[in-house]
Length: 329
Image 1 (cartoon, rainbow, N blue to C red):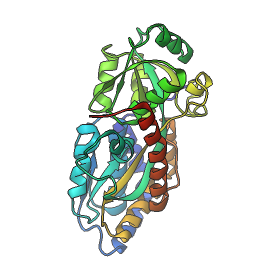
Image 2: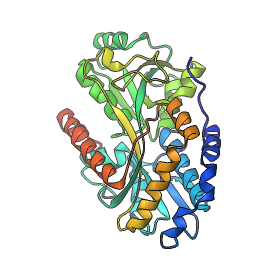
Image 3: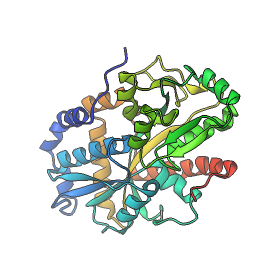
Image 4: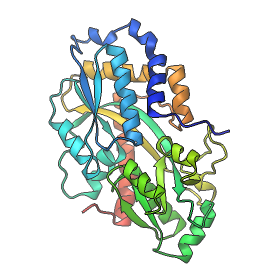
């Protein structure tokens, strides 16, 4: 049975319960007095999507661990470039952090000739999540499986369209990889965030979307969209009835990720403290179970392993972008 979707409020409530024991130890105060005040986490997309959800989980984790409030600021626009540029300019003191996405720290550099920020001007802190996307469609679409979608797209080449949260996001590149491997032509309609994209999918203005499971589930359960497949290599333990796209389109796999980064020059002791706190909190049994229910895979992470991970993602998706001739200009 598919578990009920966990709302953002419920998710944060479970986070607080899971992390309550951490209040007994304020390890952060041992790192040169950091923090002595509250801070902020910039989410470079509008509220409502997966990036926003995990940004708020991270903010609550730091607040619980330090005793200081960390607030989330949504700074959407330009495929995450506006929020990223703001954090790049911020003081490197541990009080301003950014939720990095595949667009902001992997693909924008390949899709744009000019960027308002340099993806290399950030310190890797911790990988927040790695999760598959689900392929969802408006109920009116005359296809109820991946195989039927492929057949429909071949019959009506160029007539179908898909929404994404922005050019360069995983919700853009995952369907581009699908188009390549399935040999179909589906038009791209970019939006300024997953929330607006899902709104238009529900309204029937677009036909399909590759979205993070945690933000798509409420619409799936409400019946306002239908799910055709998941982008992971294996079926999800929490939702085993959803077939993988790879069961139909051989070799297909695409995962999204979210990470926490800091302005370049942020002292390493502060980075290490934040990284350890987030890791500890994400492993708390109650929170881990909640996240697993929405398809978020637990990942061991350090600043070094995040840096290596980002290099690998840039190699994979950079090659696809060049091969497909994709651009955000």
